[in-house]
Amino acid sequence: MSPGASVTAHPATWRDDKAPAKRPQSPAESFRFPYYQRLNQRRLEHLASLGLPLQGRSVLEVGAGVGDLTTFWLDRGCRVHATDGRPAHEAILRQTFAGDPRLTAGTLDLDEPGADGAEFEIVFCYGLLYHLRDPLRGLEHMSSVCSDLLLIETCVSVGEGEAINPVEEDCKVYSQAISGQGCRPTRAWVFNRLRERFAHVYCPVTQPAHEEFPLDWSRPAPAGALTRAVFVASRKPLDLPALAPGLPPRQRW
Image (tube, rainbow, N blue to C red; front, side, top):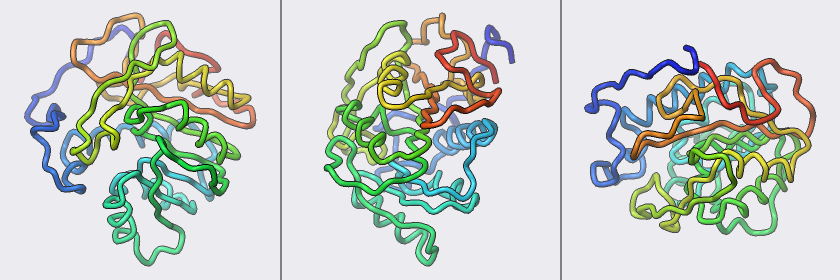
């Protein structure tokens, strides 16, 4: 699809149930309903299309929730340490992947990460950065334990400048910020903070095929809509046609 093309809205009955008041309140049910399932499918098919070296790596997954994205890495022969800030989610991760020696699970709150941490080739941060009260502290920790690739997908605010844009979230909802405060940083803020910590930072030339991932960044976001972007930070240069060494004003599917 061309950057200027419109995205057709689908019936709200299956794609628009994002309000906390409508969500089931058990940990698993907070993630496993049509909106999240569809979003995860689009996220992962896009990640697989980028041509990144993802097979057989050591992976730290942060904000793993109940493990809906974790099998992406296990199916590629990776060793995964799946973490989440909520102990209830760690328990579900341990139960779900019990008996698989490639996976370990732990509790990690990136707002309060602590000083120590083992090193991993890949740090996978999809759907977490915007749930942090202090995204800079989270980025600092992730970069400190990352030896090769930091992969981030996050909600952002549309705009040219750098801003964190704090927002309130409902901490009683299992998929939302533990602290009750998240953020909606601009793309420039995320990109520049990554450039301060990695020699090579990229944005994909494509976006996941989902209406929350804009194709034309010159257009204001619809009122109340979530807006998402993907970032790839690397210790080594990546010569891949799917990646741009900057913030593309337009992207495609």
